[in-house]
Length: 274
Image 1 (cartoon, rainbow, N blue to C red):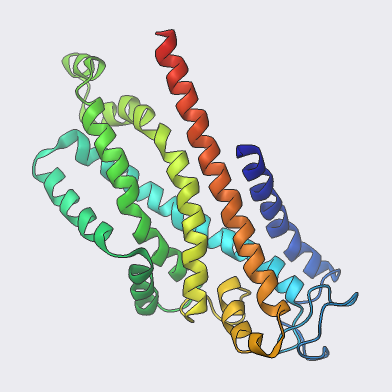
Image 2 (cartoon, helix red, strand yellow; image 1 turned 60 degrees about the horizontal axis):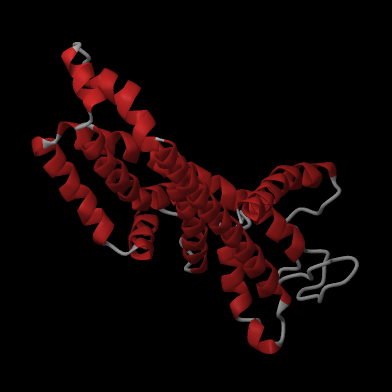
C-alpha cells in the first residue's frame, strides 16, 4: 500500500514540477488562455480533456492545479508542524499552568469542524495562496499538539530524562536532545493523513469561492464552474479535476496507512527483540 502511495505522490510531484516548465517552453498552452479555442469542446486530439466555458484546456488546468494544491498543502502542514510540535513538547514537559492554558486553547480549536473553521479563516483572510495555507494550518496545529503533548508527558517520566536532569541538563537541552527524537516518530503518519484531508478542504474552499484567485488553476474552483454545465451533458469539465483530486487523496491515504503499518511492525519487532 505504501508503494502505491509513494508512486502516486511522486507522480503528482513530477507533474507539479514539469507542467510550468512545459508551459513556459510552449509545449503546453497557458492554463488561463482560451480565447482562440471553442467553448465546451469535447475531448479530442487537440484538447485531450476538452475545454471549459472560457475555452481553456481542461487537461492543462488540471495538471497545473496539481502543483498549486501541493504548494498550499505542503506550506500549510509545514507551518502546522513547526508550531504544533514545539508547543506540544513544551506543554507535555513543563505541565502546570502552561499546560492547562495551551490545552484549553487547542481543545477549543479542535472542537470546531475542520471545514467550518477553514471557511471562516479564508473569509477573513481573503483569497490567495498564503492565505489559503494559513487557513489550513490553523486547523491542523491542534492535532500535532495533542499527539506530541501526550507522548511528551509519558516520555518525561522515563529514567533517562531523570538522569539528564540529575546531570544538570536544562529544559531546552532535554526537549531538543531527548524528547524530540522520541515523540517525532508518530508525526509522519499524521502528516500524510492530514495532507489527504487538506487536499479535500482546499477543494471545498475553492468550490465555495474562498480558495485561490480565479487566475490560479484550482480543482475546487473548476468543479464549481463545471457544476452549471454538468446537467447539460458537459461532463469533462467536472470529471478530470475531480478524478485528479480523488487519486491524490487516495495516494496520500495509502502512504499514511503504509507508514502506520511499517512503524507498528518495527515497534512490535523491537519489543520482541527486547
